[in-house]
Amino acid sequence: MAEVNHEIDFVEVKSEDILAERTHGWDMFTKATKWGIGAVIVLLLFLYVFWG
Image 1 (tube, rainbow, N blue to C red):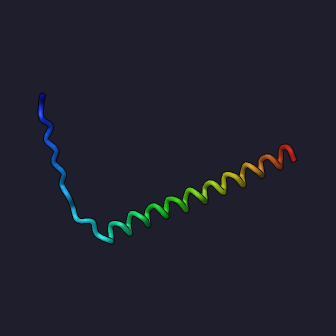
Image 2: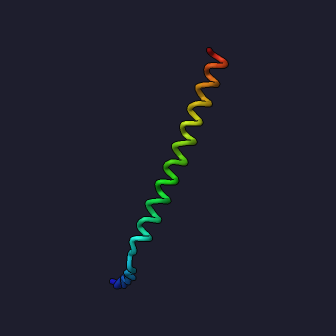
Image 3: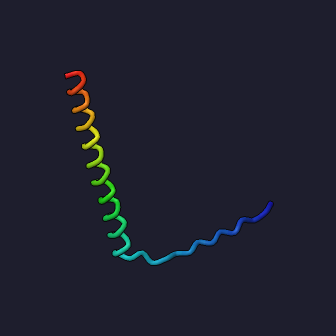
């Protein structure tokens, strides 16, 4: 059988990297939430105008 060589490079994880990743995730979450709320409002207004 052939042998598989695994090489893993470990890099130092800094607190700035963790904070940047979490900040980016929070920004994307709030952006998606705003768009989702806006879409629901538009849908409800559409339903009210045409079937209200």
